[in-house]
Length: 329
Image 1 (tube, rainbow, N blue to C red):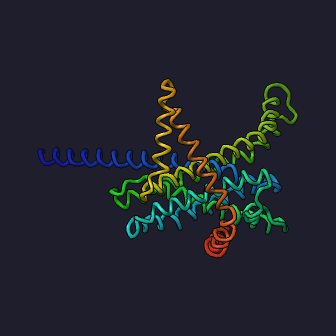
Image 2 (cartoon, rainbow, N blue to C red):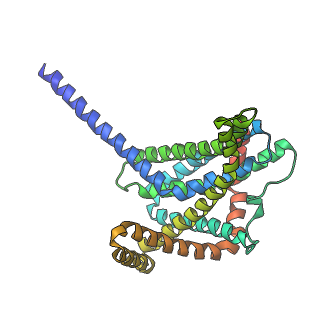
Image 3 (cartoon, rainbow, N blue to C red):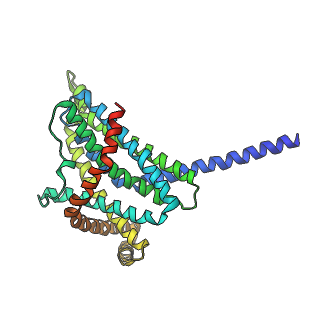
């Protein structure tokens, strides 16, 4: 009997450890997803444009194709690469994170520059829709969306990897990255599906009805364009801020402390100036100067990216993802 009690006690102890490990994995996955908010918001803001012009019954299938491609990007390509980095080249994580941060700065700066027609250096193929028949156009748009997703997914996975303690076991890192990959993909493309069908829902509620339900439907139709504009603005600002923050922290980790220390001192001064809202003042100051650095870097990168990043993606990663997408149909 004493042996059985001891065995049960050991099982209970193991169960507690396992539960704590699961909680820790879930907590780290949530933290990693939150750190990647800038890329997530922009992904959700950009993707709906890829279904514009198609019949309503093709919108969700297109979103599903892009979702599959996004999962392939994260789970089949990026997750193994991330794990290999942790084993064989952990020193590469910070430079790769900075490379992704630079891309976020570039994308955000391009969107701002385009408002003033200040740049025609961006690869138009990555952000415009090709012509053709329905099926060919759909495939082209899906491929373009998956290409854009790959870059954002790479940044998301690198950010997630950078938040995981180096001491964690490889299987823990793999599990956290897998949870982040699936979770953010569901969150982004679930939101995209809701966005692209919101107009249809509004029309359905308003059609042939009167009273509060019809008014609510008309309100959805009226609000959605403004919501998309707001989402695009927030996404652009988040990209520039997150990208700048990644660069500032990256150069700090690599040994150049001036940008980080300067911003940190200014944040402390702002907090001291308004002690009633010290935390908010410090965060706003930090985000503002991170954003300024991100915007300046992005504007510098505009002419470079179209000659290097997009051609490399076009020649290497995109063909692999396209073949996978077609093979799954």
